[in-house]
Length: 487
Image 1 (cartoon, rainbow, N blue to C red):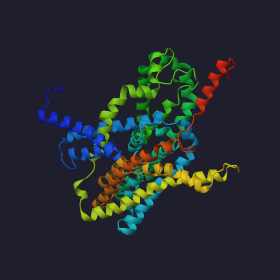
Image 2: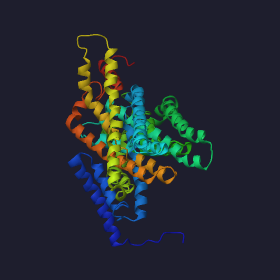
Image 3: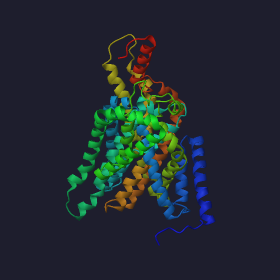
Image 4: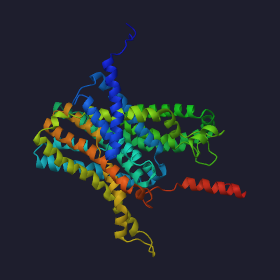
């Protein structure tokens, strides 16, 4: 029949769904209160209600929630792209690439050292596990730095910008390596065009990363400011959300069909939109609050205001909890609890925490290099002072990249299910490290920001940086008040 007959849901199903969403909310609240990481509680609820432990939810519900959770992940990353400081991103691009490379190569090297040289697994097994653990959970990174402090938006700090961009690079490289793992089966079946299969996601990601800012700066930005801002100011939230949906869907489709990561596409969509509006003080998008944009003629709320207006509540209370619960669905909980798997998993966990924590070393090294090239003066800091001041942002950078989350579980399950090379033992050892790192990272960041978050935010080098555009706007306003010419 060409329609779905409507039936009243059974009371058991209704009560299960109500309890599931209720416990997701309670677990987040308890996690925030106890360990400053509410997402850990939501992962635990996913384990209990999902296939790993209780199977309280049917498989159909779990698959539906996994899809909705992935949409929540895309929204988390899209929002991160909307809010990231593009000026800081450009200024710290080289530093972010160095941090990302360190965070990719170190886990793979340590995985070979332990699994291949220490535990006797094959090189391909060590490569697959190392690839899974070289990733950084983008969704977890954004959620942790946004929820750790209500007073400070750490995405606006220099260290937060380096963290986010390094996590994006890690994610892109990890998903490029997934294409290699996908084709490992082909090595056994016979030779194939591995060069193109491996090179395609690299080429696609590189072209997207290069062409997006170029098109935004030279084509889309000027056209938007000349012809689009007046229309946006007329319809305000409605026109904002329509443009956001179109741009996000376009970037997701381009990324998927080109062979890049949809998560990378979501991030680029956010940065693309945030670069379009004019930053001149009379520009429609230059407002001090959402209320000003809604009430003032000729002004409009910003894209992030419209995102919060239409999507923020659904993301916070439904999609984001489902994303972290879906991570719990994918953890083979009962298989983890054997003596050999526990101790081997714990050893790998320690090494993998270290492999990301060491990324923070770029902060003091960068400070020392900057100090060496600084002009001599009476106020010039010593190396000891620089090291003492930089430990907090360095620790934040390293610990915030520890969580592997959804990307790590995705990669290692591809290695198990779609190649003949990864044994169940190596899979479980890797899962132990992924799960514990996804717990240790957010908890450590929460504790760190609770103790020294204000110090990091106020740090002259790594804290919140004054936007040059804001200074320019202030200069223009001053000239107007004095009756001077505008330049």
